[in-house]
Structures are given as C-alpha cells and as structure tokens.
Length: 158
Image (cartoon, rainbow, N blue to C red; front, side):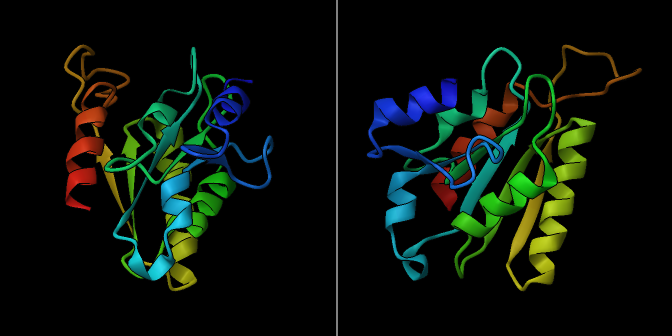
C-alpha cells in the first residue's frame, strides 16, 4: 500500500512502479526512466525487506538511486524482482547494486546480478556492512545507516 501511495502521490513525475506490481515491488525514478538509455550514467539499485516501511524508496531520484526493490515485511526481495529492476534501469554504463549485509539480500541480489551478467549486462555489487551497534557474534554488521551515505556518494559519482 505504501508503494502504491507513493506512486499515486508522485503522479508519475518523480517515481513509477515497474510493471508487474504488486508481485514485483520495484520503484523506478521517473527521470531515469525518461532518459534515453545511451545518455544514462551508471544505474544504482538498492533495496531490501520492508520492515516498518520500504525504506529505500525514499532514496530514488536524481543523484541517488535509479530503482529500489522492496521485499515483503522482514523478507528480502526476490532475485526475480531484483533482476527486473536491473533490466529496467541498466544501460550501456551498467548497474551497481548497493546491498545491505543481510543473508537474503546478498543471496538474491547476487543471483540477479549473475543472471543479468549472463545476458551481457554490466553489473557489479557492493555489500555495505558498517553497523557498529551489533556485535559480530551472530548477525554481523548489517549496514543499516551507512547505506544512505553510500547511496549519496555513489549517486554523485554515477
């Protein structure tokens, strides 16, 4: 519901939902989608499970993410959804996946990247794991807060 509300509030001017919604929960930057593929820079894609809300969607736009992929509540997005996000935004300059250090996110983003690479797309992936609040014992560093900074720095460089 929050994704649909965001898209409706934007009226297609800022963000759009990728075809296949609600099964494929991908929010795409309207400015990115409206730019011819050969004029685009490196596409940035991030995402993750939708805990209290799908947090990465707030970073979709100019100078930040080209797309955000949303999973269900506390569940990583599917590899299929990530793959369709890559296909939707990757141009000749390629695509960088910015992934938080959760097992499901690493697995599904990685599988989608490999599938896209087999089709000839330029795709790379960086895993963010800066979180110092959690001990390294069980879960490890998740990359919660620092991911925003990575989005901004990579967005400026892309």
